[in-house]
Amino acid sequence: MGSAVAATAVAATGLGLTADAKEPEKERKMKVLLINGSPRKNGNTATLLAEAAAQLSKYGIESVVAQVGNKPVRGCIACGQCHSKKLGKCVFDDDVVNGIISLMAECDAVIVGSPVYYGTPAGQVLSVLQRMAYAASGVMQGKPAAAITVCRRGGASAAFQTLQMPFQMLNMPIVTSQYWNIAYGSGPGEVSQDAEGLQTIRTLADNMAYMLKQFASGNAKEPVREPWITTNFIR
Image (cartoon, rainbow, N blue to C red):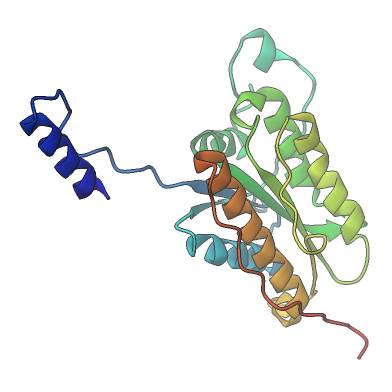
């Protein structure tokens, strides 16, 4: 396409018209930030985020993974210094939060994943989201967002809703799927047996890619849907 544009520009110049014959700049690749809220780097949450990343890559969209990890993450102490000093980041710089804020500034969308602990997301990922939302809402506003949760049995829908709450206060379009973005598994890798859960994540990635491209061009093609898979867990 770039060669055609350049050729057209050269032809126009030959006709005595003013035109820029330079090749257009290469289009910047879109990037999605994947926040792994699990303390386990390679656990079930990571498996789901990897499924999303693989699907996004089919649309030429890169993924950047931020691991919350198993080190302490501070909760917000309502000091207000991020606002009063106009820092654009949290005043505390001794954990992962400001690094994730920097990644968010470079990305076009975000997916946050978490295991379910007592019917709620992991505490450290909530601290990350709350501090990001308050200290650096400017790098989040308007960017598509989604949440993913994984559990052994129950509490996933409540945790899923909790993770999405900050997005709704930051004018972030929430990306949907064929079902809530929930999958099931307990032991390492067990979530890979949830065929419907994995498909739900792929559909989420399809929809996120479509939304990003539609925002950018206004003429994106709708994704082709997979035949619906259903998975039951009585055994």
